[in-house]
Length: 286
Image 1 (cartoon, one colour):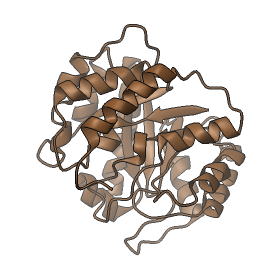
Image 2 (spheres, helix red, strand yellow):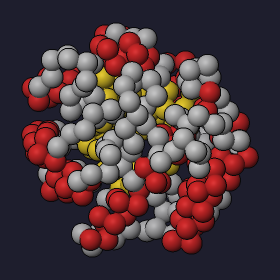
Image 3 (spheres, one colour):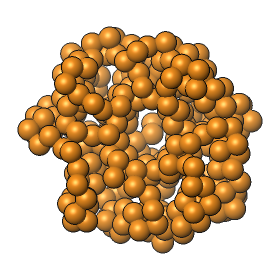
Image 4 (cartoon, one colour):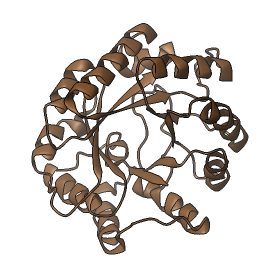
């Protein structure tokens, strides 16, 4: 099982700005906690997502001694990806593709064709620079915009992205609740069909029936999960209510229940939880 811990996802929608010092202190703990990947920050408009305005400064202050985690950063355009590709501290570059025109308009002011073109360019850039491209499909399980969705449409776009060179494709629901049954159906269809793709689950959920949803993905062969400590965060640009993230604590609990061996450093993780309680807390959060 791979666990991708995403402080970026947790922080980006907060109403209060977390200081660079606190971000660095927190992320450096996470890097030593034993997760496969830490999604640290993003290169985005500081006007739209002010919380991520200091991402480059955070990168410069990462302590990479004594840690083995991959360091992933999100880019929403080629210029941002080029900046990330030039930095040795970056190992993975993620990009939020979607075949929902409304989501792309709200999130990146792009069309589906533009987004596909950017995804392909980022994949090629990563190949040249020795980075790993992680191409998310946002609104992969449907959307709240009354746009057509079907499993066949999702299958089509996975084929297109695979043809463009994508080999890691996490699927995300972003801002709508989805059922365990739908999750199972999707992964049961995709995983056998694309053995060369590592599929992941980036689940937004209100924390109801999370176990059934994770288990549906697990039983269908999906072993890559994004989480956020305490489930904070969501997509502030989705044009809909924020729906919290799958809690990292729940993923760890699931792994323990399934007797999955993880290389978690509990002392570092406990310290990260302690730091998180101080820097994330806000009266707006429940």
